[in-house]
Length: 416
Image 1 (tube, rainbow, N blue to C red):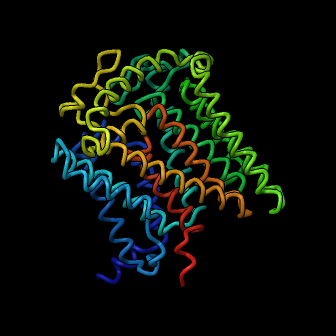
Image 2: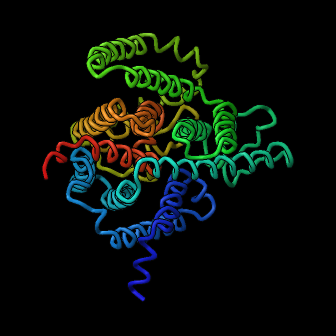
Image 3: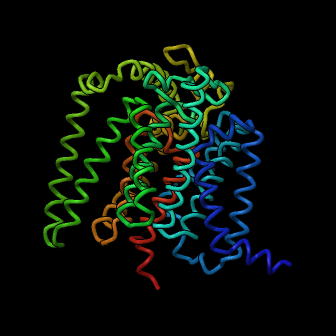
């Protein structure tokens, strides 16, 4: 009986199904909470962690000493853990730490038991279901019934051309999934992993998501991903001897572009018609900045998603008068919760992961190796206006992308 259960839990079919379920739940956590509440979503997450642990225990050959988290990610999780010592809200820190650790573990599980193309396929399959379900409900709400489905955050504006939120709560989150879907579906097409008909449907679905979400933030994110993607295409087609010079030029160009974007941020915001959203965010960032000044080095203590009834998070209000559940910026969020130490470790982890992913993407012939680098760009840019990088599906993608890059370029791989 035990041997049969172990064989089932470690079978390729079960591993694939579990991986797609994990990705789907992580990317649509808002819908899971809307349906089952916090207790139900925690129970589902706990069940996935248990199943992943049992599946991994049945495949000990998948766990080798080099197949561990990158040290920079270990440092980030360790800093979250030790923040219990100075946390102003110990129980909330324990809960937030357990929540983050669960998603990090699920990301490690996926990276261990699935290769990169299988990971992209899992993300693609999960996004097809999420986006299809989103548009089905949007059509019911905005076209057929002409009434909002407030229980899942759908306002019913599809007939007016948007903005729509799908089953993920906000238009920015919906647009983020649309951008991730476009990337994943393109990789599927390039690797011939799915049929042409399914590719056409998938890319149309991703395009509709981005268009109807009408997220001004998404335009900047897509521009960044497109620029990096074109740069990768250019470098991948060059000879190895010419790549170093090209990469140096691209690095200098990227730094100049970043400076210009900061200098002309006002006109840039006006160009994408994001003034209202920026006003909402700057009011939150201003309040967060005041709190950061009180605990600048180590922060107030890790908590993850904000418990709005706990100080200091209860003191932060947006310009509309509401209590946000994050700083609406991953870098401001980590500075608030883990201080300067936290932002240094996060930037180090993100930078190391991207450099490794970039080198792998330029060295390997298969297009699938582009996915981690562009996913990290997507997460890094969207985290300037949202805190997705630190929570739930964003954290899962961060861990899996960083792990995939480290597995191919880690210095530990030089040891036998």
